[in-house]
Image (tube, rainbow, N blue to C red; front, side, top):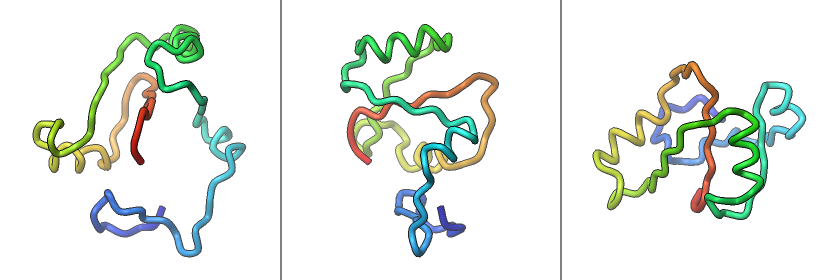
Amino acid sequence: MDESDADQREEHRRTPNAPVPLKQLAELGVLHWHFSGDEEDAGLLAVRDERGYSYKDVVNIHPDTLPNYEAKIKSFFEEHIHTDEEIRYVMDGS
């Protein structure tokens, strides 16, 4: 990502764009899977159980559905640390 402090919802790609290979992400500890889009997908449930994920929060991030939308969006881009792994299962959107 670029170093801009402009609206975080913009793309912020480097110019020229420099995609990160999945191998490099894995070296950083970033894991990824592809599932069907069903919250009860057997593969998703297996990963959840294998990695010990016990919390699930379903969020529809849209101005009409997320209370205090603007502040919440900003908080998603503030660096912070979690004591446990954090997983994002994106069902729709970009």
